[in-house]
Image (cartoon, rainbow, N blue to C red; front, side, top):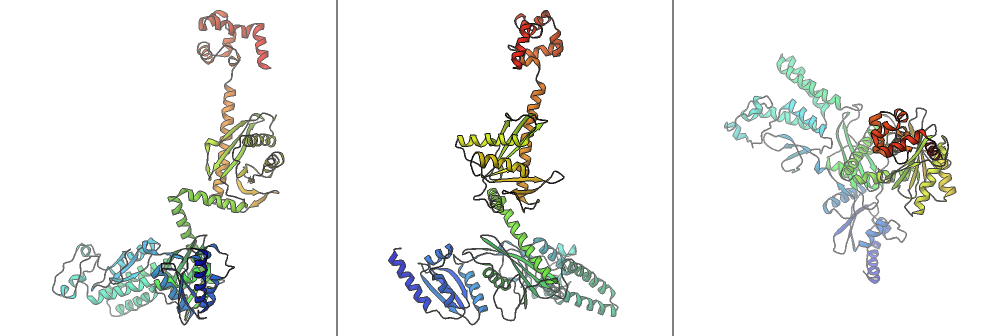
Length: 619
């Protein structure tokens, strides 16, 4: 598109905006193919739409949307509520490219009660409203099965799929099936159960699915008393069993005072690209609906806009007519006859927190599911989290950690382990023999190793790490800083892992002077950092142990020039010890090795020539 064409397009759009009414309504944006790419709502159409064409608009995604608009249409309505409803219906109808994408619950099952003469009740993932009434969807499958099991136990609706009619039952067309014989059905197909009784059970099942269980309990109790007064004790006993079963189910699901009735609860949990809106419905003190919707952001929508959309969508989907909605903040919307409540304490606050917990858990579950399919996603998330916690200039792709190991200053060694993308990169591990430090001086040893490590990387022009983690507290961090910044004049962020009195790592330190970074010890990020610490301990101790082992196995035979491992092994096999080799005469040695090598060994232990050789070795 040329500059002249773009100016002509904007002039046309601004002429439409100038004619827009200052009334509530919904507006639609079209692309060059006259397809709807965005649907919005407004209290004031002119004010809202004109805001998109201000020169000071700085949101990148909004600028992209404006660059795609070629035409605008709008619909005026009477109230803001009507604008919300219209926006919601148009988004679902046209699924515009730049609107929030609702990932609805088509993958979750619902419970269906069919429209048949003898209705059936079953779970399904296929919604076809001409076949019956649907309750759900249920994001928690266990809850759905518990309700189905309760209904089957109480009312035993038929399980067979055979179409049944009144005429067929009256003419004796049908026969009972296995479900009747195993007492999972009362046999309405052969009039073992009356049509009226069957329909009464279905009606009560509908009320249970709606969450109106307390009214059913009251009706059951009244009927039970009436049967007892008429001395129909067996029927009263059967009804009592149903009453107890339903009452037990209600007791398990009750979470607040039963004085709270017919209330909706909405909360929102956000991340950069997605919003999770949880919906709870409470009736008679029991939660009878809980679901979390996932909204994919397209234009960096704020929480209020998303919550408004979620409230309209979910109340419509779940057919809620509640007159009170509990929310975490004012959504700045009006619904006729509805009161919004932001609780500060009490049972309603408990419900709000429960909704928030469900939303956060759903977000966590979705994240885990995505990370199973794409493990790198988890690594990037942890790198971003560490970057944010420490305020690093870039994500810490490469992290290095150092540790020393010695016993009373002997066989002193050090190790460096490397993590890349939060995973061990074992091919990059390095171990070092301490060369310049005498005695057990951990700080001096650390300085030597860090200096040697990064002088070499600089000399070889190898990439430097994005973060150095000191296996220790402030002291270790300081000696690393002295080498990195004061001596080598390079800038690498330095963190430290400090231990508590029980020698357990319990905090992450960063900065100079070091400050404690708030990080839960049970978090995934802290687990990765302690894994880094454990790995450098393991690598350093293993190298130190190997070095000690070699030192312990060293003998005087190793210092004799001209005597190799095979000769040494042969001598030890025949004479059993270095002491007996020292004491052996020339003939005994000759019998084992031959004259030439026997003379070398004998001279080493018994002559001045051997003494000179020992002195040279000592030097």
